[in-house]
Image 1 (tube, helix red, strand yellow):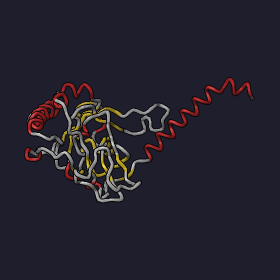
Image 2 (image 1 turned 45 degrees about the horizontal axis):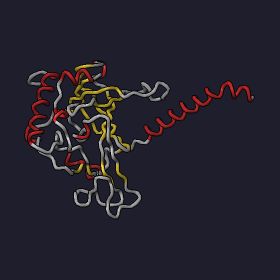
Image 3 (image 1 turned 90 degrees about the vertical axis):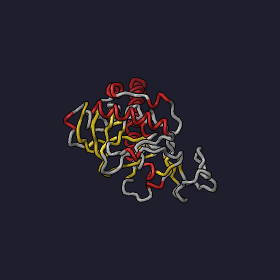
Image 4 (image 1 turned 90 degrees about the horizontal axis):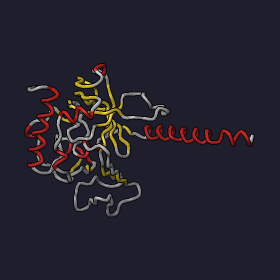
Length: 253
């Protein structure tokens, strides 16, 4: 038995580690909480990225196409889950412009990183004087939590998550799981590519583009196609946005 353990020990350790990874993945996936019907969700404070560089706003359809495995128009139909840094949004694929055309008419899941401040023991916060960027609140109790999502991808630092009934042009890359994970190739799950233009609300009207306040409720953020704080940034964004949409959907779309 001792000799057997000596021979097989490394393999047993590897198997135990792999099993731990699988269980951790399942636990993370199971931790998503259905929030789409929560009437209080919109009262969460959305701390978006108000510090941007000129490079953030400079992008092109060609670069987005190069990054993307799937470019599509999708429609959110009201199913969203949330875990500590991310909305998991179920969206119907209306049309595909790059990638697997067989997805048209099907549903996919899109991870939308959003950082919120949520205080279950107190009023939802909207006052900059009591909101601390490090997530501390005077008198806060132990059940308060600060969800501080610093995602690798940028888009959700500048947008609210998808809203029901709206159509969006999205630039996506598949979410990858290890082959040993039970979630590997289980369903179509995607992340946004790294661009402020990876999520474009096609229903947005010119009057919707306004400078946003630095501190905003999630329900208020949903009224802005993009969260930018000054007119110069907005003008550059709108110009590039239209060029990207026209390049993908065609002029007049």
